[in-house]
Image 1: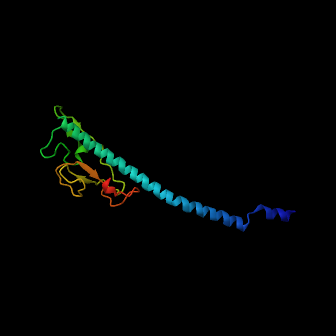
Image 2: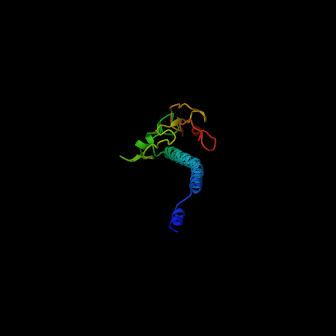
Image 3: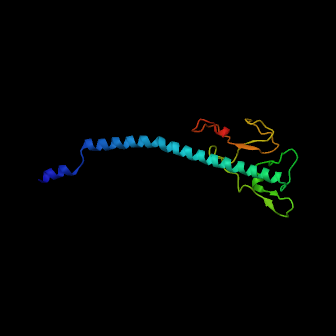
Length: 155
């Protein structure tokens, strides 16, 4: 009777092989899902950063059209550089008051740097070189392609 109990306590080799095979199959299924999840998260961060900066540029334009901030000639009412949205611009008619539209320039999650491609109002819509007159649009400098098949630089 004691001999029989000793054999009944453990697992057979076949059972261990089956469990190992199931674990390998589950691991091979979850690895691609984890990769897509990480990439999708970065893409959501990129969309958010672009939306935030484009909204700040639009807000700057709105304020300049209303005459609340000074407009430089040739800028069409857009900021002359992206850093101006962080540093702030003097509000017309108020002493020592600056309009700041961004706390900081976000980091491009695809490149890992806070450098972005810029287009001015005078540039073509698909231009990859900045004319330097003003900041009308912002795009990613990443050469990658999104999960939707569109290059990040065209987002």
